[in-house]
Image 1 (cartoon, rainbow, N blue to C red):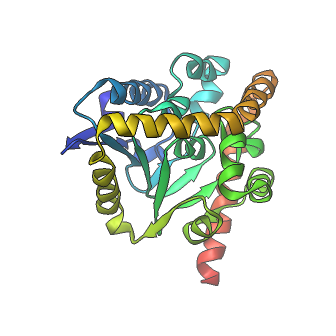
Image 2: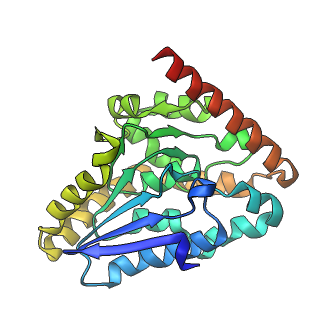
Amino acid sequence: MSNVLLTEQADGVRVLTLNRPGSRNALSGDLISALHAALVELDTDDTVRAAVLTGADPAFCAGVDLKEAARDGAKYFGRFRTEDCIGQAALARKPLIGAVNGATFTGGLELALGCDFLIASERAVFADTHARVGVLPGGGLTARLPPLVGPAWARRMSMTGEVVDATLAERIGLVTEVVPHERLRARALELAAAAAEVPPRDMLGLKEIYAGGTEAVFGPALAVEHRVSRAHRTDFDELDGRRSAVMARNREQLDGERHDG
């Protein structure tokens, strides 16, 4: 289990790296457990002052492991009730910076949105394909995405499933900065180190202020998302086929953008 999540630390900054590159760092059961435990530990380990969340190339996170979901059905999704790694990212009481190194789709996008802010490699791409694979958002996407990019862009991403590249993501406010791919880790560590310089007591208060303010804004939206997504009936027999169709569509869109460029 430990190999699916790499952990390293220096000078008060802990780096968590999703490590299932062959599956685009999709959230397998083992990774869900490992990431949830690691995020909980951030708040209990006094040696950690700030953290960076990233993925092993070529992706940040593809979200739900649809192969496991198709195999295990409701049991797979039930895991998020007891080990909600996506929700735990948003609950972190220490600065959590998302270093988006590649594809960030669906549940992976929800995970990224739980970070305090995001910086992106020029290779990063984002998409919300929940509806296209027959699953509704349940990790806070419909609550957290609109305040960042605006209601229209949030609905556009969710309703079309189109891929948003790093340049556009920065323009609409999804990420705060885009850097050359080889500079991503160093830049994320620079920002985390700056946050780590703030005394823990002051940072804890700052995080509490931001958390309280955002909860007041999107708390009701989050409650609606949880209610509707839990009532939604997913056809598990169709998951793998719809996943393949979405992946083919994403590849076609990305290939078209490269050709246009």
